[in-house]
Length: 322
Image (cartoon, rainbow, N blue to C red; front, side):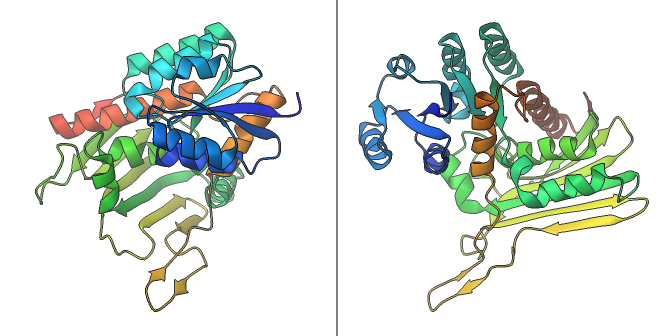
C-alpha cells in the first residue's frame, strides 16, 4: 500500500480541517465523507472530490477504504469508532476519545479485537514548539523537573459555538492534561481543580479553571484553562508553557508566533504552528508503515480520566486521587 484511502465522518469545524489537511498529504486520499447534513455533505464532497454518504455504515462498505477519521460530536465517538473497527478500518478519533471511561474502554477493546490501529487526536504533540520543549526536558538540559505551568485561553465565541455541549476542560483542558503527562513522562496521581464563579455562566459547565496535577515522579503542574477572551482579541488565543528544572527553565508563548499583521480593519496574530497536518500525516504513516501510533487509545483514556477527576474536584472541593 502506497496511499491510504481515508474517510471522514462528521463535517463540522474540525471535520472540515481534517479534510483540508488530508487533501495536502501526498500519501493520503480523501476517498469518502459522511454527515447527516445533506447540504454540508454535498458541498464538502464536491470541494474535495470525495464520495458523499448520508449513511455512515454505507461509507464503511466503500471499496478500498482503509481508515476513518471520527470527527463527530464527542458523545457520538463510541458508536462511530466501534463500527469502524468492526469494519476493519484504522481509526483516528478526535479528542476526547469519548465522554465517559466506559465508552473509551469500549472503543479501545473494539480496536484491539479487530486488530486495527487506534490513534487519538492530540495536536499539541505535533506542534514544533511543544516538540522542542519535550526534547529539552528529555535530554536533561533543564535538569530534574520541578514544576510546569500551562495556559490555554480561547475567545468567548468558542463557548458560544459549543453551546453547552461540554465545558472548557473537555474542550481545551484535555489538550494540556495530555501534553503535561507527555512532557513530564510520568503518571498523574492526584488532581485538584477550582473553577471561577465570579460571573454568571451562560451554560452550566465550567468556563475557567486552575488545575493542580501531582505526578508520580514528584513534579507538580498547574493548568490554567478558559474561554473568556474578548471576541476582538487579535490572536484569538493565549497559549503559554513555563517549565522549571534544577538546571534550567523554559518559557513558551504561542500568542505571538513571530507574525503580526496590522491593516485598516484588523490586527491579527496568525497561527504559524499548525499541528493538525502533522498529526494526520503521522497517522497515515503509521498505518502505511505498520508502526505503533504516537498517541494511543490508552493515552486518550488517561487524559479523559484526568478531566473527570478535575471536574469531580470542582464539584467536591477536594483533591481526587487517580
